[in-house]
Image (tube, rainbow, N blue to C red; front, side, top):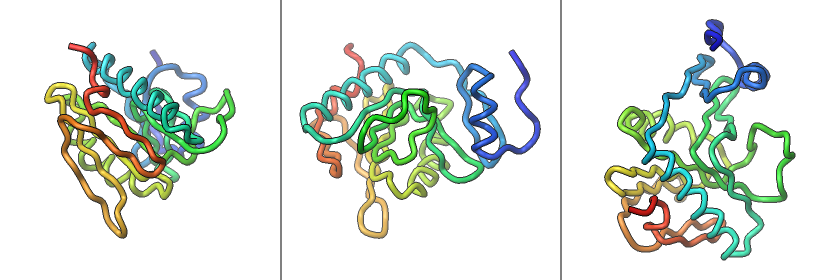
Length: 183
């Protein structure tokens, strides 16, 4: 494994560097961070979230696409995150793309080591992206969803453990239970 670069990078430099350096990383204020290994519950929940989003997109018949983890979301010139799942509007992106330029929904599956960052820096960062209308924080340990959504000039937050999650725009509805792996 190669050491991480010690110099400040822009998102464009980071994306070029990541092409030749496999692994999962995020760029925060120009500094690169390797992402920790994940627990099985996190991985299973991540898959359940993607499957639920993809199913909701299909059921709604909207012109959106769901993507699993691995895609980059640019926050600004020096910060880029890799959410656990996302949805974007429009036609399919280029198959060689590593960045989704205009996501409408981003999802982070929380873990004990990421809860604080997910609820602070990422919450603030994601809503700096004008296209993002929904940020879901999925907690597999507590089986809870925190749904942050744009509302007027601010952000509204809702905590859900059951029922139907409505994501409008783009017009998706999905059972909260579908976002968690089967027990």
